[in-house]
Image (cartoon, rainbow, N blue to C red; front, side):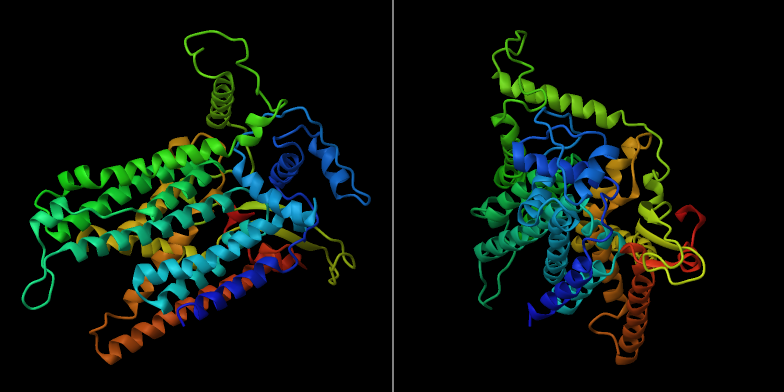
Length: 501
């Protein structure tokens, strides 16, 4: 039963993510960059040059198709891993909408299964784990990002995988410390200062795996680097807590002596090595952008191999581009507004005429793909985050702290770039943890284990009503997430806030 519930939830999530995945038949929003770069990586090993999107996109979508790819290296704003992931779908199904969206749909579905299992481990409850996964399955932003070939869903997947690995590592390390504690005459282990200060926790392969996945996240988009920093701090605090519970007199010193190597040296170097390895195609190429910039150049760092200096120069140029991106955009938003869904992003919009493209009304219709979270879920998550702050600050609940850390890792760094052109769909990276936060709040609403039957009944009914309302809200907005043709009046009735238009 531990797997039946999560698998059923994942099947439901996969059904809505793969349903008419090739619709709309277009290069939606930034698909015009990533789908083409992915194909270029398949063919060249690096990002080649394409004509202007107004020329290249119609040729790719035409019958017969034309692929106007040049082998001249192109400057791109993001590392290659996410595009390699998209390329895997194109390798299997070709350069068409289904092909370039296949892998994000697969990772979106798999992330629902993973969150069920992560929630089960976090809350020690299979029903609560399945609830967390079900909430992710019915989140509109996660659905839209799963059905379009952008990079942020890939970052979310690798970060979530790393989070799960760290949870497993935490449980295993604490179990080893517990096993090392002396056992009293009553057969129960007791905290022991010597054990807490000096006992080792053995090899920690799950922490190494977390470093690998965090490296893959950072090599998809650079915001993964901030997640790495947050998670390093989180693991150090977990180790301190474990040492304190084991009886260490000076837990921070014990962690510094016994655990810091695993906390930092197993995460950061592994992530850095992984990041560098993802550029292998560029290093092996001869025409990749800037590949030979350092050839024949002297200077202070001439002792560093030329390919590495060329790569570093390229990376510096990417950094300058990203921090200096200030081009106004109609759907850009400030991170202050993300949690309350202040400004969603319109990925695609068409107005089919009456009698055409599924429009069966006397007036024109609307066909849209809107990157908008399920409103009732996100607004409930705002309340849940306040509850988790209470649980963490006043009750020292480590689960609340872990969830808040993951949300902060995905959200807080963007406040450093409020003048940059940024979009609310970047928030998909921390959507799983909003679902965990709501789940934790609903679990508390249902009542503690020792509560009387009446209290638990009222709490369970209230929690169930909220879950049903969130599910209804998802169904209500589903046409806007999936590009269905609906009457204009129906589209307008779903624009609950003026800032959504």
